Length: 154
Ligand code: AMP
Ligand code: ZN
Image 1 (tube, rainbow, N blue to C red):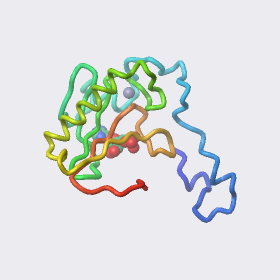
Image 2 (spheres, rainbow, N blue to C red):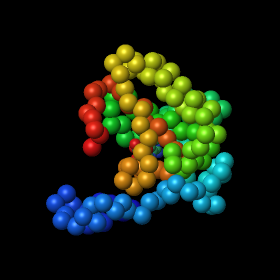
Image 3 (cartoon, rainbow, N blue to C red):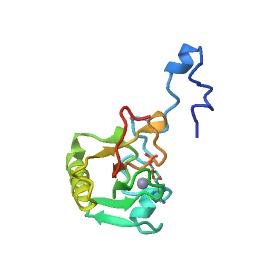
Image 4 (spheres, rainbow, N blue to C red):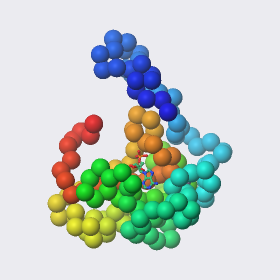
């Protein structure tokens, strides 16, 4: 994976082009034919979790969405909401995905209540591509709560 340091981009770099040019995206906004529209990618970690081939702690599910606990929680409550369908990132979403997004956010709100973080407030976030911090190329929303979060995020 290309990291900031791999790309030679440091905070004190004097090279304006290096600071401004994003790395080559792993998640181009134009889907390629290899995974676009696929129901499932057999190589994908989250597709395999959705299929039950890799264990996870499920906290919610319906016919379109599965919610699991993050294996490396960054907050007292850290849940991942995954569409069952293999969508590589939010960059692939279109107007036709409105119903799926309603399910994802609806389940996030329900889980926030059942996890006891709704009253205090919480964060729902999705990372896109290398600079966005995405490490698993299957769309997911992080539902995080139980502590205060800073803004802007690091
Ligand atoms: P992101 O970096 O936004 O792509 O988020 C990927 C998230 O998946 C990270 O928060 C990881 O901790 C989490 N993760 C990776 N592997 C697993 C797994 N096997 N079960 C649950 N969560 C995972
Ligand atoms: Zn997948």
